[in-house]
Length: 287
Image (cartoon, rainbow, N blue to C red; front, side, top):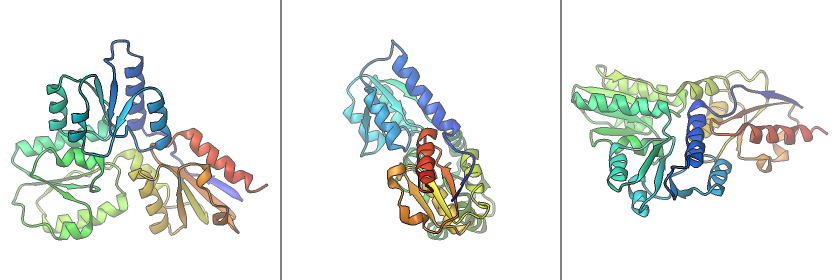
């Protein structure tokens, strides 16, 4: 069985940045303890367990705003997904030391939205409902309208003549185009700023032509938006049976029966060593 490794793989720049911020915070002797992380830094269970093992307290299971109520003092780290200004302000008023690990691409989206809000625009934001990146945006203002599907785009009411449209950075370039087409029809005068990040775009585009592969394995966390979108692109655009695995233990030998060529890719928050272990396990199936 031939293994075709699809590039790029490994951490995107936003994930590298967030992990670097955490490491510097841990090594800084002036960091005020305890250290809290507001939600998962990135969507990868193995990486998060490593962070917990280093003594960082990870809060989850609620909105970022509400999670701050559990912190009395110390340092709070904002995850790569970003937070709204009101979360930032609440942390400041509580006297917490703030460390911001937000992905630079997400910060650009926030900046543009805030700029257009100040000019009186209504904002349409295409994103995944209940995803932390979307949460951080929608909380900015009640003039931000979250659209998570084509049907929601069709059902939007008249929002006036000043509209700015943008999106979550980790969505599928193929799914989002359909939504953008609908919004262009409804609001031909809208200003559109497609902000799917380059790392996400390159990984998805690389899946279109898999050089004759009969099966695709995506290595990534089951909570990772960009990893799940890779599976969707491979299945629905490339028309190749595809599976998401977090580790080599998730591999099912039945998937590989009579398969002569398999493609391997990974999500933007997947460590290279985990993907390497998956590839090695697949290679062992040939022996």
